[in-house]
Length: 309
Image (cartoon, rainbow, N blue to C red; front, side):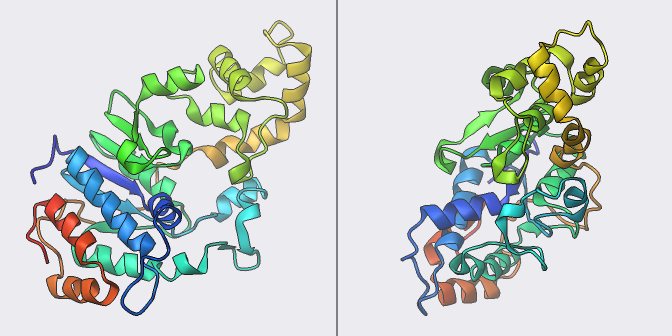
């Protein structure tokens, strides 16, 4: 299958396998009874996405560190509620999903799909670095709005947002961000900092929701611009908002560096070419048999234009 315009597709892999795990029945099992719903779901997502969007290149980005120390040092509440073991910084993940992660790694390796994380960074940071270092076009596949901050019409970076399902994903560019939130298309990170996100342990500014955050970012441009306005008696800020922002000053001083995706991650060597044939056909056949993945793997291989294993 020839790719389109040398298009690069970047997968927020955890976002996809979590969606698969909770969306595909856990009754989907391997011959030995091991649940493989997340594995099969992820493979079916990859087949669907590459068939629909026809990328020439593909990277499955992983969380080598789901809660990096540099973010926690700035904001200790960052993802703290998701900890299963605080001492070891381990995320709470269902055991039936945890057992499938090594299988996902083995299958991606045998297929020849580039996949990696980088110690000390989240998958979002890997995605941000790959997207910013590429000449585009780039499709970022995720169910996480945090990555809306990467949209860049000039460079052809857009989000394939999967909140309503992979098959019904929404293509998000700067105009969509502007229409949804009433902000300039590249201002999502500052907007999200103000609004906050309980799912990530980001408190935001008390009493500031989407509408007010959008108004403030449109008016002052950035968090720095907003903080500067606190020192300007003539700035267009009501007494109530001025007080709320002043109360959140310490949070606003550090949160932008927590929310903003990094673009400077040291990447390993990799080949992002969409495979035209499995990297390890024998291993793929063994994995297909052991885990009952024949149909899903064949869909991926057909989508890649390769002969079924």
